[in-house]
Length: 65
Ligand SMILES: [Zn+2]
Image (cartoon, rainbow, N blue to C red; front, side, top):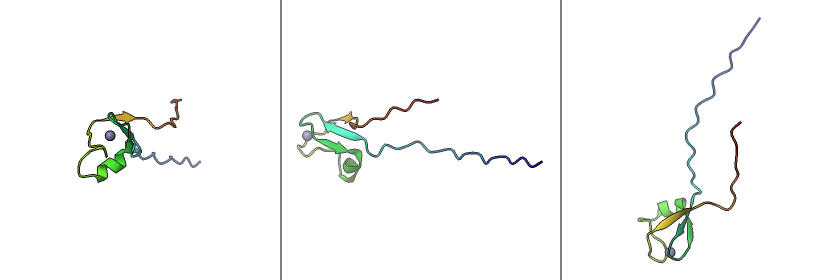
């Protein structure tokens, strides 16, 4: 009788939402965190530096079973 023990699943690192969308509270221009990270400083094209996090339009809800 051979009972193989399944290998334990590797712990997955926390998912980084690179596609997080930020919206300028002044002009409403949307930009991604990826774009912002490329800039020397977090700043909108209009010069404003206050962003609010905006969820992408496509949101899938996954319920844990
Ligand atoms: Zn702006």
